[in-house]
Every structure is written in structure tokens, then in C-alpha cells.
Image 1 (cartoon, rainbow, N blue to C red):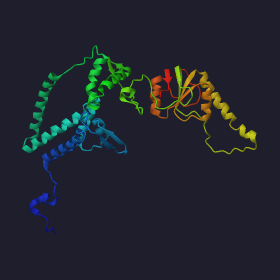
Image 2: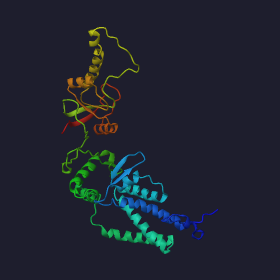
Image 3: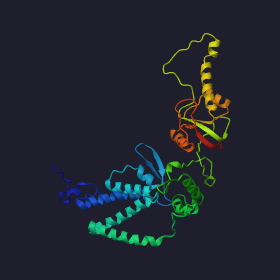
Image 4: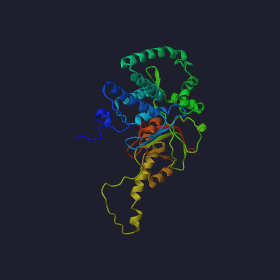
Length: 359
């Protein structure tokens, strides 16, 4: 039994609500692919340039990211459509090869697909459109070399040349700050660059950006070493040419695995209860100091008893609870993080030319 309101002459379109469209055939699939890619391009194209808007992205782990960087936006989005996925892969490859221009890649692809949609609706075949874009690409390859403004040669490259090379990249995100940040970034990259096969490469993990609350951008500086946003735990706040012992665990007495009950009958029992623990802790801290260690770094808690003996033997103590920060510190000073309490061997200790607390 059919409904009296159904217009059979209108077909499928008559069954849909106002504003809906139905597409069929190969051209319909092509248009749907173009539409999905245009949606991804529309999301990121408003973030293009130094005045681009930030996007708030919530990923599947409910982690909130606020950024205008296209590579980060595309990475955090959960893209399932195959055509849009190709655009995200193109942005990923652009970021890996050049480190910049990801937003231009996605936005430019969106504009080309927008023009493609108009050509398809005009009646052109997809093979004709592809041939036209190939001809345009060949013509673009001829025009681009004539538009070069300045070339930075690999041979004889100086710090000034590198600053000129990265300044346009900085101006795209931090317009007006490229004069301040350019020399700092070049100095950090040159300090951490490693040579392999005659070519220099820089690992982004070797450079860390630390933000100090209340500071200005013109106060930025490059520290050739490691910066921890924590104050020193001891009264000694500086050391030079110091041997550093790093503990991946806390500096405290280990607890028993099973619960126990201690019965105390008089004051002497109470006074001597922690005596053996104090003697053992002093023995451990003294052996660390006798090994030549001036700076102790702990990856966990430091008990009050341990801190008392560290102060007694005039050592400097720093707590770094993050295992990633502890790994960076070990890489910077050439130390190995110990998982046992006791003195470190010379191979396990690190060397630091200067360590100080600055406020």
C-alpha cells in the first residue's frame, strides 16, 4: 500500500526531504570524493598565514589541542574518507620533506578540486581534466625557477645565510618576531646538528622549548645544555665541573613487602627504632659523596632523611619526576639513570661544566 503523498513521478528525489540530493554513477562517486577533500581543505585554509585562526581539535583520547599548524590539525583529525586521507598523507609528506608548507598543500589541492568540480559539471571528462592539470604542472615547473629571489648554497653556508632561509618560515607563524627568533633557532640547530654521510641533520627531539611564566620574547636565549623548570631542593644552588649521579628511582628507604607490627615498651625502643635506617641511609649518601658526586638527580621522591644527609655532605639535589625529561638530561650530560641506591661507577656518572639555579 503506497502513501497518497508520494509522488511516484519524482522518483527517489521525491522521497527525500528538501535540501537533500542523490547522486548515481561514476561521476557521482567522483563528486563525493571531491566534496570530502574540499571539506578538509575548508577546515585548514582559514589557518593559512600569520593571521590565520587557531583551531580547537579534540582527538579520540579527548585531548584538546589549540593550534594553527596544518600538520598538527590533520594529524589529530580522525579522517576515514579515502580521498581526504590522500590529502592528509600529502600534508604529512610535505611536513617530513620540507617541514613547512603543509597548509598551502591542502588548501591549494582544495582549490584545484573546486575548479575540477566546475569542469565536471560543465561536461568535461576526467581524463581531459587530468591532461590539463599535467600541462599546467609542466608550465609551473618552467615558471617557478624564474621567481627565485635568493638562493642559499650548501657550500660555504654561514649562520647569516641560514637565518635568511628560515625567516620566511617564521614570519608565516610569528610575523614580526622572526628577527628575534631566527638567530636563536639557527644557533640551536647548529649546536645539535649531526653529520652522517657528508650531510648534516637535526633531530627535533634534541631541541626543547621552555616557556617561563612572566618572561618576554626578546628575553629568549639558547642554553647549550638542559633546562629544568624546577627549583633546587638543597641550599647549595650551583656547581662547576661537577660529576652528576642520576637515579631513575626515588632516594628513600625501601618499604617491606608485607605489613608488620612493631612493639615498643620504653623510650629507648622508640629512639632506636629508626637508628638502623639512619645509619644505612648515611652510609649510602656517604658512598655517593665519596665517589666524587657533587650533583644528585632523582627521578622520584627524596625522603627528609636522605635530604638531611645530602645537605650534610654538601651536595646539590634536583628532582625531575618526568621520565622523558630524565632521559633528555642523561643524553645531555652522558649519564646512565640508576635504578638502585648506591654510588655510580665512572662510566655511569655524567659530567656538567656548570649547574646553577636562576630565577
